Image 1 (tube, rainbow, N blue to C red):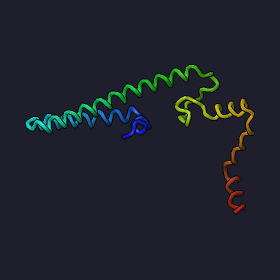
Image 2: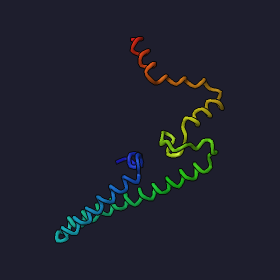
Image 3: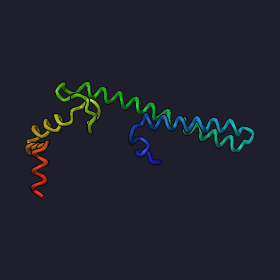
Image 4: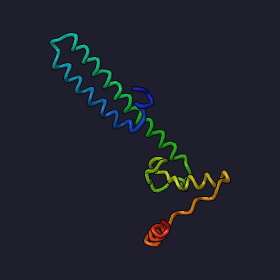
Amino acid sequence: MALQQLLAGDPEKRSKIYLAIGGISLVKAIAVRNDPDRFRRELRDAALFLGVGIVLRQYSQVKAQKREELESSLPDWLVGSGDGGAGGPGIDTTALQEAAKQRLGGEEPEPQPESGLRARARGVLSM
């Protein structure tokens, strides 16, 4: 498995999976302790999985700590209600996009589509 794939997604969930697989391998190693070759193989597998699980857990803690540091350095108007959008938890991405467009002199924001019965009726009639 490539390192990018290993670190993609939620590393805390992956760490739990690797720790569980390592625990199962450790139990298997104890079960086959009479066969020296298989015992070493299972013990090695358990050590690898447990090691990767511990490293992923530490990585997720460092990642969360860095995210908190970045969020604390952002201005208050940029930190939103925690909509959990693309910007991560606690960041209002629409405010960030609007501020970037204004600062860079970009194009005007797109008008929001009408919602409700009137908009649906117009959509049906325009077909």
